[in-house]
Image (cartoon, rainbow, N blue to C red; front, top):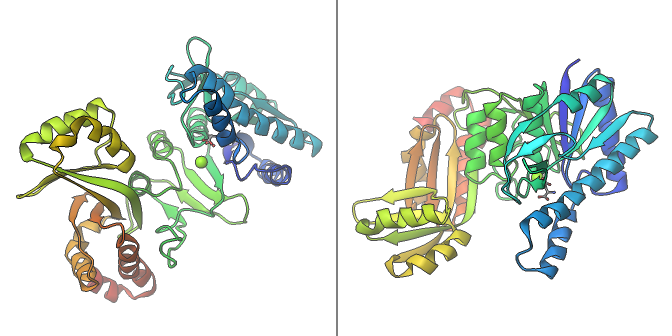
Length: 393
Ligand code: ASP
Ligand code: MG
């Protein structure tokens, strides 16, 4: 029997009614002849509530005990869901990360899954049970409870799907799929029916919020087809599978709250070393004839300025706009033209194999996203092949 892993996020299990609705979705998939393994998040707001309680005790709470506290959230939803399934006449068993033998390293609050001993879950699935595993938690070699970092339930789901060779890992959330851009910014954004892993990885890396980067990378590495879909609406969602980027232009990712830090060329190596020491991710290094700069997240900038302040010549808030697709390399000139016609200045751009990243002013990024989306995605969806050639020409 094929195995499907279904992951339900916080809003999907946010109330008893929502849990009931989720149970019906699970039963539907089960009745189609699948084995079902469910991963749940804590009810919406619950993890924040627990973090807040801990911070009232100590501004830096003991890391081990914080994990003990936070894992309680997922235990509530898994038990309520199992009870609901029982009530509806189905056999279901809930398991903590410890019971499901999800082994992690000892990095409390941000642990990494090292291996999963699948025997206990397999035994239950073979016994025709619906198995419900708490997301975002595991156990270290000492037997202590660990958590995987905020949003980690998606990672639990793909890790289980990979270890058990599931047919598909379905991530149920409050949007009905992956969009060509953030629909709150670009109204014309369209839902993508399918998407390849390289494009999804680049979108997630460059700011698309729908899936966490580690979740996408894990699924890709383990060849687990991922499907993003809504637990509120019917629909097929977006299927993410395949190693090849087939789309000319897939989508546009936006990342706000970035800093461009300029230094003397002779200080660049020291600056990069400082970032490495402080665990700060450098998104890009800009080396132009007359200036050298790096791009980092704004919150990381505070840390860096503490130790490097006197050597930073200029610091500017910027936003990144990344166009993803295998024709990204061919649209540099036309993008520059389109944006400059609208008085939008590209501070810097960089090209990767399947993406074009533009550094823009935060006040212009949304307009730029609309212009480029209109030109390369909306227009191409509607226009003929000949017009398409003209656009990319
Ligand atoms: N409940 C955890 C969080 O809110 C994990 C998750 O939902 O993925 O971060
Ligand atoms: Mg999430």
